[in-house]
Amino acid sequence: MILPRVKVALISGADQLVLRSASPLRIDQRHFDGQIKLILEKGSPAPMEKWFWYGNFQDDNIREKLQQAGISANLWPIGLTLAQQEWQPRHYRLLVKVDLSRQTNNQKLSQLKQLLPYIKPVIIELPARKPEGSFRCTDPSGQTQAYSSQIEIQSDSPIELVEAPVGKGFHWENSETLQFGSPFWVAFGSDGKLCAGADVALEDYLASVNSSEMPADSPLEFLKAQVVAARSWLLANWGSHHPGEPYIICGGDHCQCYYGLSRLQEASRRAAGETEGEVLLHQGSICDARYAKSCGGVTEPGENVWAFVDEPYLTHLRDLPDAPALDLSQEDQFRQFQNRSAASDACCAPGYAPLVGKLAELAKLYRWVESISDDELGEIINRKTGHMIGRVREILPVHRGPSGRLIEILVIGAEGKISLTPELTIRYALSPTHLPSSAFWVERQTDGFFTLNGLGWGHGVGMCQIGAAALAAQGGDYLHILQHYFPGTSLQKIY
Image 1: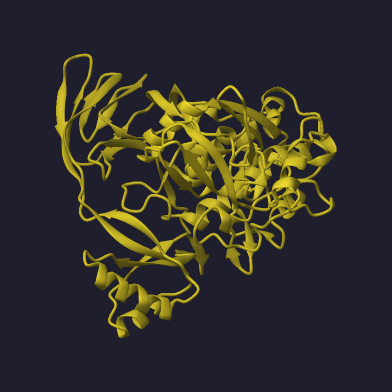
Image 2: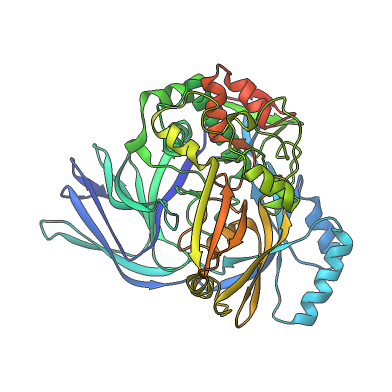
């Protein structure tokens, strides 16, 4: 049984990138000096097609049922699972083409609703063909070579991606020079721009994710819980996050943070090695084990954040083990809890456990406050959504989840109004970068400012990373941590 390799994108939408290595960089039979620049010369984006995206299905019989009803559909394999020492899809998503005719689409949707009454589709775009273009590779000696298809770059030393974007679009966005092993690949994304990244062994990828997501000096039992969750998530979601692109996942927060050899430390290697091949299972299926930095005290059901993520182990629960259940979906209860900051309220609260260094800093996001003027907020919403609503007058909660996270809000401006959903859209549209979470309540100040009083960092689904680190610091082992945040699951070594 051969483990799959992970093709991960570190950069996308680029016009150029710089790579360097202490050894010559090899592309096919050509050797370049220790630094090369790749410059996009011509890029033609792929035409995009809209599809109805349904999921999840355990077998491919659904396609035959649709064909009998006269509906043509494609199946997209999602996830990987081992069956008789062979990797097979965990389940399938159904793709049904969106027609140009509204009447035809309505008829098709009506038929699909009868055949699939409990599944609501989302619309996605997929490239109708491969993008086309060319890029030029040059080195300091003046050697130049043009390429019009994907290339692989090899070196006997680590390959550095110079000024790689980290945390793109978030408040911690910066550029770093990151190191990766061979092979490093460069291709055209569906936008016709350059994308590039590493092709890495599964367990090596996971060891780096461990210390890219969280500090490598975190408690070992937490790092073990983190890597089991990351392994389970990857295998459960293989092929679902960037369909139609020339890679499986990206190296940013959209998928899992992966910064290559640059963040790899002995503790993260040890955590991956001591849990090699271990995954979480629920009813025999590999778990979609999601996680976020800080739940703020209560976790959010997965179905409130993403389509097709209605899993019984991604439920609403109290971060603090054995504490009474807490539902923060009502405005007064949420505000009351947000105004509290006692360490006894949650594992992720500062002071619950003796966290130090970076972990202690991250724990401070248990509660947060941000202010923004009504004028600036109107401009940000216009820039990010394309809706001109003018100076913002009110931000009204429409739907909160049980963790207190806003699932839908109504923003009323001097020139219009806009409904924002789901939580990530809310976080994106109300901030120059991203809000830490959508769990906040709003105070309208007399000076034209809005104050957002929030809790937690991230979507809040699944494992609370700060809470899990605190449980480990208090002596909890990784199995205890995983079973707390993913109730009803079991741990199994599958390879």
